[in-house]
Length: 314
Image (cartoon, rainbow, N blue to C red; front, side, top):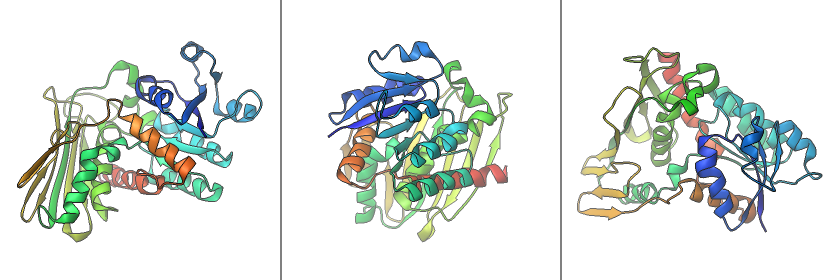
């Protein structure tokens, strides 16, 4: 059995990671694409294409058939497209963040519940071997009771090809929605549902409609406090992630690298060459085998809750 995929949105991430992951997965087939740019569809000969999701859904079973829909559009379109696909009986894997706000994110989960279809979110760092190992080691108490964690990502402005990230009407926010969301979700993966959150946003350098820097402070059960700081205004790249416990520290810096260190131990656990490969395989296992998703929608929306608290506070 195969999962037949319809990919909606042919942008940078889709071309470099998502579609290659689908094409290389033994149980996946690229059945169709949706893009407003016909030239992008031409890159996939023999694959059906449409300019809207509605047109693709209307043609389902005639021109082409598909089982799952990957939503890879700007954030503003996520809710409308994901709900339409779920209501049409399709399983949905959606790019992050889930939606423009928490209410929209909840509405997508509600659509998945009423349709009985799978909803996954592309927080692929949950599938990093070292993040799963870190969760296991925390449960074993290698650093004692965790009390503090931080995820820091510093870099420069995104490329012009992803210029929509600078438009709040399209993206919701700047680095808070783009790169901070991955760190917030990683913390939620480790510590569970966040209980409280506050934060700040600013434009320290760039005159953008979205922030160029954001800091979130998050509280979890058991007294864990976490800080996520994300910036588009630093020429010094940072990708730091660490967890402090009563008895020691666990260091995952750089988060995208293989190293995992804790008192008395160190392991090298590299990520897949294509980070979306394990994500696609995990979703396919959910569809075909009934396996629980590593990044299910009902957990992923709590990142949207955190970012909403920061937006309100800022």
